[in-house]
Amino acid sequence: MTQQKRNRITAAGIILLLGFTLPLHGQKATASFVSAFGYDSCVLLKNKTVTVMLEPNAGGRVISYALNGINVLYEDSLQNGWISTPSMPRSKGHLAGGRFDIGPSRTKPNTDLFFFGKWKATITGKSSAKLISQTDSANEIYLIRDFKLDEYSSKLTCTQTIVNKSNKPFTASFWARTFATGNGICIMPLPDKSRFPNKYIMFMNRDTINMLPVDSNILYRDGYLIIKGPPQKPKLEMDVAQPAWIGYAATNNLLFIKKITVFTNKYYGDVTAANTSIWYNGKQMVEIEPIGPLETIKPGGSAFFTEEWYLHPFSFPANRNVEMEQVKSIIKTIK
Image 1 (spheres, helix red, strand yellow):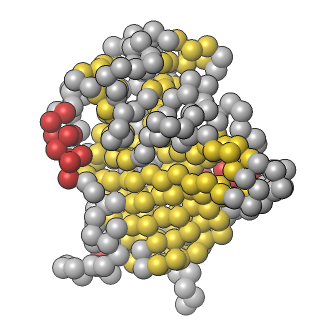
Image 2 (cartoon, rainbow, N blue to C red; image 1 turned 90 degrees about the vertical axis):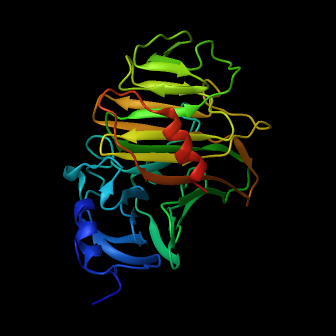
């Protein structure tokens, strides 16, 4: 049997596989090639309680991020094994999992090659791996995504690097487009003083922004914005405050946390210059979107941005009223 094991598995099956390989006590993190979700050449990072599945065949995604076998990322079994072809260059429906992109969202070049195309996967350490994109011939850039799972915790470090191979400067930003399971609750710290009168803005449609939105599912309390469920319109933007994190209470009893760095000395290039966007596709999935600052990359140069991901057990509140003291206590424990 080759290193690329032919054990086809899904997120639900990952834990079954691990159940036969993990000892009861003391499991160091490992990395291996497996087949999963209908794809070959995936990379499985795992420790005693956490599994991460990296998928290089269609978009260079994190297709599963699971604690004790429960995946917090959105799945679509109808997409299993899909790859971009000339007859179907884009997936039907929204491509599932933890996706990444470059921005700004309205002025970026076409990124279909990165978002849907094939990547090269390599294992770089006992619990780390790298995905490398093809080169975009129009702009002579390519992307590198580095992932490292902590040996003893749920911490997953995700770094995207933009490499400029051209002979002219290239300007772009990091843009995370992570699909989590749907109908959960978003929580994030906001600054006391915001550029936005109501602490956030709402896109009424692609071309119209409401600067004074009012929504019964969104509230600002004691320095935190809480989105209790799908808002009136799907897309929101806001500025997350330092120390910057975004929490997502999923209905499958997990708290998904992203930690990022906000750069006060750099320019953010999205339409509203916000550093975070949230997009609810009804109750189906929620897109958690940290946005990096604009970087002008010199010829032959590169720029990177890092997210840290964490998972923690969290009983989903039936009344959708999150106990903020519990959330803050969890945030204090992650490193």
